[in-house]
Length: 454
Image 1 (cartoon, rainbow, N blue to C red):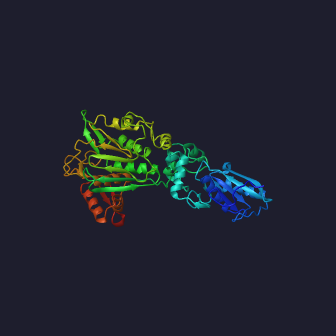
Image 2: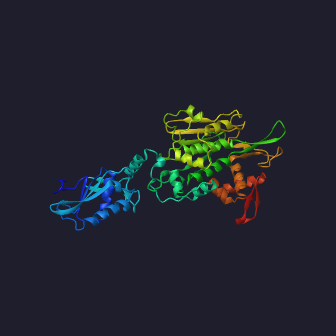
Image 3: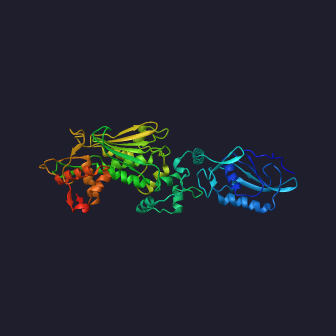
């Protein structure tokens, strides 16, 4: 005798005349929805036709649940033989899974592979529905969620781990949280991968307001790559100045303490809310550098807590990776290091917190933070080789950056200046000519072989 199940399809019942690959979609849809029953051996109009080889059908069902569906859904699938109207059927019970979204392994975590029940149909899930299931399974932690992109490469990350002396093999990736229990990449892996979708925009402004751009870039790729490139970008505009101390010895200092710049950047990467689209912003002015991050303080943490070293990271697994690589020395010391680097300067870093953002402002340690010409400042000493007798020791921030670039690379070309500054050929030529006239760059070669040395 049958079990009295209504013989018409609905949200929790599907009928199949015989085994077909479509059963895989149904299993996925039931596991992603409220569960359901699938009867094999019944045609679409509810007529019982029976199954010729029930054992073989059950084997196929369980193989599909274990191999064709990811994550492993076998613990939520039960198949058995049932007799109805004197004919054998295969009854497949599928319960709602706990590791949603389930998907067809050959299709991946995208609408073509993720199915849900809509009435009597197993339909592709929307991207919004997929993201909601991922967030539910991860407990609302972005870095622990399964990445929607599973085709990831780690060229930059592998170099960072190698430099840090930390293994980067499959088992270590699992320990660090880059993969989950099913071997799938998490969003932490996505952030460290070469395909990382998060970006940082950096800009240099003339003067002290956001009116005129002097330079701007967008940094992308692995967070490791972004951190290093943004750090170099800010460093180009962080002038070195020389002063003569009371012991008549020359002391070199930067406009912004290197420790403060590094810690402000690390803070921006570790505490960012990556689930919210939009870039982090770094803005360089004549008198300050601002680091604007998406994501305020964690609930329950105040600005005073932050200043005293209380650290509740929004991305603890990312923080742990950086700790293991020795990019950070200890948890909760970043703000104190920033404040300490300004202790004897007479200047104070500013921390501004809102519900959805955190801005760290590092003031310049130059005494002349507001020079007469908004885009110019003076440098002296060995960095540029200028002296008190130089006719014009002042140099713009863009000129400073070009000389710094030449020092970093050993030599530069006109095309390098065009690409780095996003400027025209004629503007690059005029800029390089001015630097030659001041003795800050020397020209070597002719025509296409021309290079400039610092």
